[in-house]
Structures are given as C-alpha cells and as structure tokens.
Image (cartoon, rainbow, N blue to C red):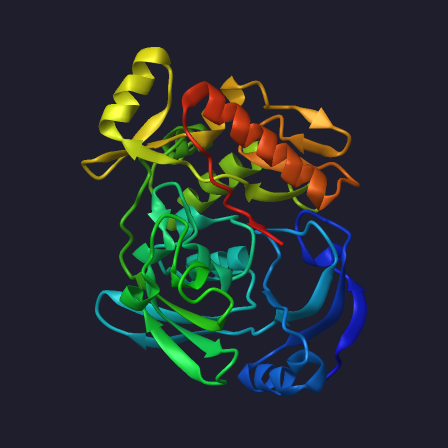
Length: 339
C-alpha cells in the first residue's frame, strides 16, 4: 500500500482549495485501513484526517499530517422483510450514485436526498438532509473502525444520537472512528414527501400526474441544479451555514420587525429560520471579493471562483456571521468543517 508524501488536495475537496498534505493514502477495506494505521509514518503523526468526498470541508492551510481517503465500495441487500429492504453501502460510495441505485431498484426513502454532494460514509456523520428528509429517517446501522484501539463497532440509530446536522461523530467521538459501511432501511412501498420547498411546483412543471420516487428525485435534481453550482465548475461545499433554530416567542418578535422572515416549525417549541433569507437581506447574495464569493442564486452557498484561499472564504463567512447577528440578533453556525 502506497503512502504518498506532499500531495496536493485540490482534487480531493469540492472547494478546490490547493493545499498540500504531508502524507496521503487511500484504503479500500477494513484490512487496508488497519494496515495503514499500523504504518510507522502514520503512527508517528498525531494529526490524522479521514477524507470522504471532500464536500463538507474547508482547508485554510497545508495539512501537516496524514490524510486517509475512504475508498470502501460496494452496495448489497443484507436482509429483507415484508415492508423493508436493508441496503448496505461502503463509506466510499458516492452518495448521489447510491441514491440513483436505490431508485433504479425501486427502494424508496432517499429520493428527496438526490444530488447531495459527498460520500455515503459522511451521510450519518452529518445527518444530511433535504426537502423534509434526513438520514436518521432511513438509517438502520453503521460499522465504524476505532482508530486508536483498532476494532470494528456497530452503531445503531440510538448510538449515533442524531440531531440537526449532528451526530456523535461530530461531538463525543469526533476523530475517533472511521465509518466503513452504512446500512439503510428503505421502503418497498413509497411514502411520498412533496410538501417541502418547491417539489410539488416542479412536479407540476414536469407534467407528472402519477407520483413515483423517480419523479420526485428528478424534481429535486432540477431544483438543486437551478440553485446550486456544480463543484466541478465553481468550487463550493453546498450549504455553508446551518439554518438556526430559535424559540417560538423569539420568532414572533422577529416577525414583527421583519414580516417577510422565512421560518419552518420544528416540533411545538422552536422554529427553523432560513439562514439564506437572512444572508440575502444583509446584501451578501452575489457578493464577490477576488475569487471568494456568495453565490448569486443561493446565499447559503459560499464559492471559490478559481483561486480563492481557504482563509479568504473563512474570512467572508465570518463577515456574514457578524452581519446577520447585527441585523437579526441570531448567530449563524457553519455547517462546513474548517481545517
């Protein structure tokens, strides 16, 4: 197994930031991973980063450590029952390709998550979500390898402690495990979710008269494509900020000052406020300074138009956070991991 030195990560992160890693190695299975972790070069490095699709990360400087690229592949049905199909996928599988595979096989549940960038392994870590669906809604279990103690552990949904773009892998177990495989419980009979965003309008535009998971996926792909830049063309990591959740009373007070504020109920006690709307109200949408900018079609997305540095994009995000806090009294939180 080859451990390469001083490797550019420009092609391994969706922002296209050109920084170098001291060591770089890809692994294709658990045995590979265990072998890499036993290598003296890797063991002597205190700094270790496991990289998937590189779609939720912003590098601000060279990485003076070891980057391990998760290339574990494979998709298989591991069990079935009357209502569900349990599909296991390698952490290195491309997420959208996995969704398309499920749709072709007629497995329902992930169609609303079409075209989300990144790999399968990152999906439970981030509890990715879109258009009314989150990973926790279809998650069954995952297998993760403990970096220090070298053992494979199975995590249930309860073990993962899913929250809004959160899991134990971003808090309690941060940088301790490598997610190797994820198993999803998908439905034989679909439960269509078309109420969120503009899905129904897009289905109407497409002339869809009979709902299907394929039609919903196509509607989501069309909507996302119209709002979000392709990372192959313009460097980005999708939504850079989380939509903040505030109390109902705070939201009502906000609505008195800003009647057009956009919010969505989360349970009975809180409201999720649209961060993109607030950023746009502060005048950032379409802003550009050099090659760092705020995308013209979606204010939640920060972009690299070519040669922006990670520090420049991070600085722009800080300016946006301060601006929104000053105007609305709400502190935005970054969704992207800063390295």
